[in-house]
Length: 247
Ligand code: IPE
Ligand code: IPE
Ligand code: MG
Image (cartoon, rainbow, N blue to C red):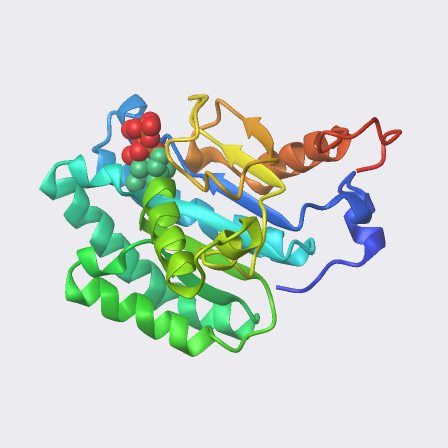
């Protein structure tokens, strides 16, 4: 990984000043991708993990500060044991394979969600990756694992109330898993469904939403560039008045 210069960013058709600070992705459609090819769902998850590599790289190189990816929701616990087992195996394999390169490139890994639900081997692998990369200065990569937006809010509110009787919005924000990544600027969902599925409910209050039919394993950097261009074209008013095209 190497940060792109402004000139290189412009060569992708992007404006260096219009890159979202915090990108979040609901990586959906792995199962349908596999089924459409006559493959087992697990093959879709494997292809999905492979797609992640270049997206992380590009997000970092183009200068975004945070990337939060939805890997496993609290609701995904309803899935068959066999599929959950496959996902856990892929998770361990992913960290073992990618951790050195991510570390060398200064990526800071953080899991968000209740990791304690996972088998010990998953917990240990993820914790080791977090510890190894904790001091890194580069992209903040938040991986949502057994994550739910509502559960996160309950947790944040409990923590905030344990410190003060009258927490304000900042106090809640400070107690979210993603406190140091701040609000989401661009929320992408692949796979064709137009919903949030309990992801980053508080952080996405003013996110720009981007939905695509492309299934996650097919989401290449070209697709991400499309989403970034779309983002740059939005007039973010935050309830105020038109900002004359400025982001
Ligand atoms: C997203 O792909 C990955 C996880 C939820 C773990 P899906 O497994 O939901 O794929 P579809 O939506 O069934 O195609
Ligand atoms: C959202 O996808 C969760 C992840 C991508 C990890 P789902 O496939 O679980 O969401 P629904 O069931 O379509 O809402
Ligand atoms: Mg799905």
